[in-house]
Image (cartoon, rainbow, N blue to C red; front, side, top):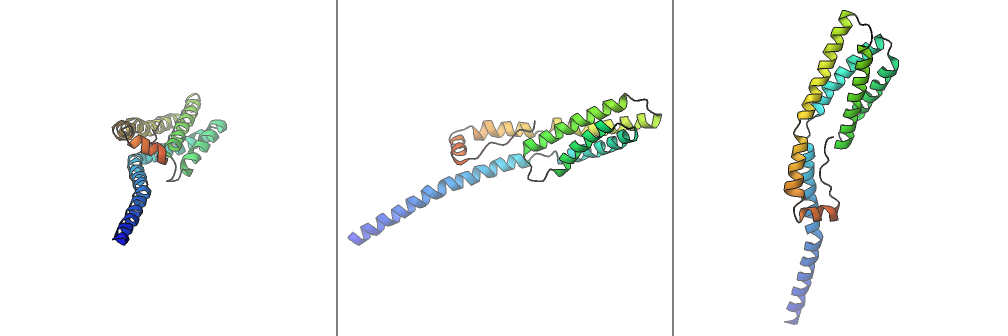
Length: 176
């Protein structure tokens, strides 16, 4: 009888240890998957590709007009966008997009300040429209609203925030 009692205590101890080890691990993995699902819903990559194509065209026009400083700046921002890997964070992608938009506007303004041929003026208008359309779509993207819903509806509720804080799972990043 004593052997059975000892075996039961050992089994209960092993079971308790397994529960104490694997419950937090499972909770962390589950919460991280939920955060990854939200961040995976960011669908701006296609819009950024369209914006980058318009930026390339504007660079060509700026180069032909001798606007080297503005053209080189936009070229550098474009390269940063092109170098972003699939593992780039949401904030890195947002910063690259902001810089691209800023460089585009600087070069667009410099070109608009030049005396342009009719063809160059039409090209500038086309490239500007080709850039602004995707940028407007990025602004309408529902991603930040999805992040808000997740944070207020899931992450900030007990015990999720506590689990996230203790186990190192941050809420999804905003795209801004």
